[in-house]
Length: 314
Image 1 (spheres, rainbow, N blue to C red):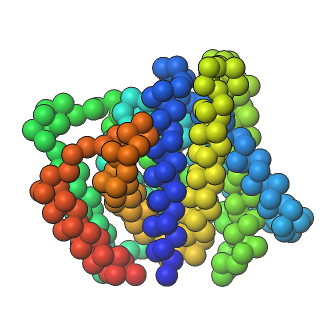
Image 2 (image 1 turned 30 degrees about the vertical axis):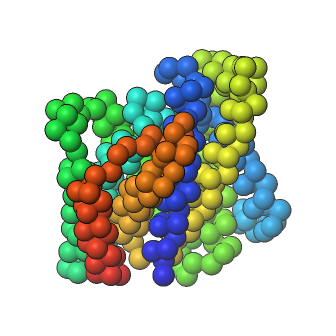
């Protein structure tokens, strides 16, 4: 049942992406999207306080090398987030989800190289089914004009973001407590991961004065600062919910290279469903596109391939 965690995490990540899309389109100055990383100090600090309040000092009682490794994983994740925000400012949430389908390939490669993971024949075939589903949606739904004008800038930024995101997952898996997954072992790993994210964000706040200026005018002194601040609080909430579910999936999953493809493909479908259902109702948040019968058929076929892939990967 571990597969439900990356699937449900993708829903929160998707909502989080649409809120960020709105903020980068309407509120932040160009080339200042990285300042959104700093605004997540709110959720990082809140999660650390909550974990300590619930578990007490036990949440900190892990070997020093594990703690430092998990802090490093959190810092790497923030570096990737900066590239994500740069990409989302140049494109939109759907573009990044589409280009992000390269992440499973990165995950498989790093999982084998760094973690020594092995993939059975059935799991490899299931992996190919899921990659095929992504390829069907990504390339089968493009129009002639889209094929002629690929957004290379967004694609490159997204690939860099995916590399750091997957590397963060790998480092997290390397230093998470060994043995059977428990609530306390998960809380310990998540505590230090969030601590690393907080420290890296604080460094960004200190060394990038343009980010501080963007934060001030967007969330504290601008004409619509109250609306923007409320949106960013919602962004923090959805991100932390997605991170909790996804990181718990990493703790209990068989291997990291199985979690990533399920999470990425689930994000692709979460975007499709939300765009289909809410795109016309919330156009400022969701960049709606017209779905043709061919596109819907592609998604249905891809969904079948994904279900078969998940069964085989388990």
